[in-house]
Image 1 (cartoon, rainbow over the protein chains, first blue to last red):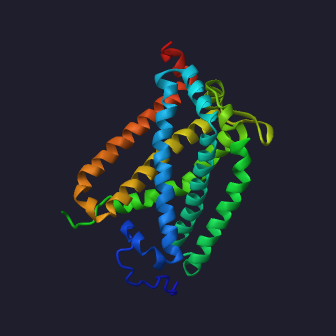
Image 2: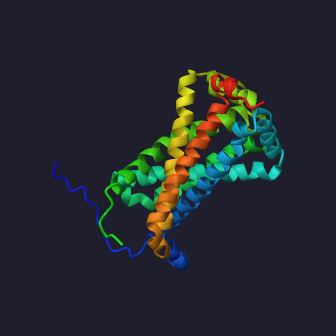
Image 3: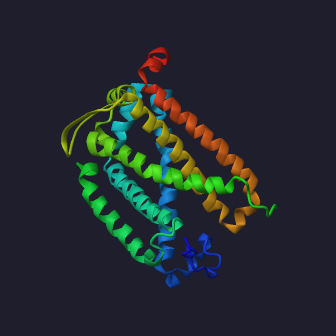
Amino acid sequence: MSQDRRVESYDRGRIEDVGRWKDWAKHKPGMWAFYLHRFTGLVLSFYLVMHLAVLGTGFWLGHEEYTAILQGLESLYIVRVLEIGLFAAFVFHALNGIRIVMFDMTIGLDIQEQLFYLSIALSFAIVVAGVPFFLL
Amino acid sequence: MSTKPSKTAGWNWFLQRATGVALVVLLGFHFAVEHFIVGAHHITAENTVERITHGLIQGDHVLGQITINMPAFLYQASAILLLAFSIFHGMYGVYNILMEQDALKKYRQPLKYFFIVFSIALFIQGVLIFLAFFEPFWEIYDPR
């Protein structure tokens, strides 16, 4: 295999520093993908910790308390709406994550912006289709 | 501060990718079961026991009556893998975001150990939740 698989590299500065959000007006789509991936990742991680804390009632207090706390939370409309947000965070993070893994395998690098728009569009479609499952 | 690249960084990078790909499937399955088939507001301790102890997924939500009877060990494996992978992926991800901030770089060591201990604690809590709905264990333990 003689084909050169290396990708063109260039100085992108301190792109990893979240502090660069101040330059938001100059950001290209890839930077928004970076921020959205970070943001949804933080949301999902925070939820994971809360999730394990709440479900812990099942072990520490018992089954009746577990059912009571879950039904209590689910009776709140705000919780249902926040769950849609959680689902949206997961769907975008998953689709954009696949996009990142593709880049690691040097697939699709020259259409990275289009793939970002595709992950946004697909996320939107999947979340809209999922709304009834959370609200009904 | 050491400038040597960490020996485990390459492995962690790979594990972050591998767990990420696995989580697309595992967390997708988790959402499908709990939100799309059962419906979060229909979750009770009784049907959680059915799923975890017997692999019996039953629901009557937006899609109507659905019953899936999968091998119990398969459901249990998916639950434990979801627990382990999501904790690793989530905590390593947050740790990395913190480490990208120049102001926090001097706290690398303490933060690393905090995240390792915190992840282990989360995993133990998750296993206890699992055991609470695993009948052979709960029959012996049940505090009531």
